[in-house]
Image (tube, rainbow, N blue to C red):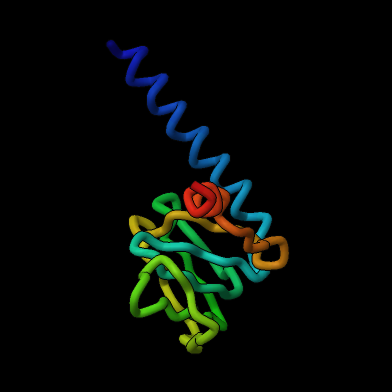
Length: 112
């Protein structure tokens, strides 16, 4: 029983270290963040913690389509310095390597 707790604690520590190492590479670089509910923002990563709460500076939020909340419009708004709650974060990726691609599943359904 005690060894299971010790191993769980070691696994948790390993995951936190991996998160810190991976996300730490992007400190002071522009990242794009996707949130639950379809919102997206990009900004310069200034900091984060083990719960994935992140701090972005020079943040720009991309406005969602009124009819389809998971579709973004060409509009955006500047937010400045933002603290993003980790429980809402779905994805963090470098902004310079992000590329939008068409949804292959929608194309297949349209062909049917």
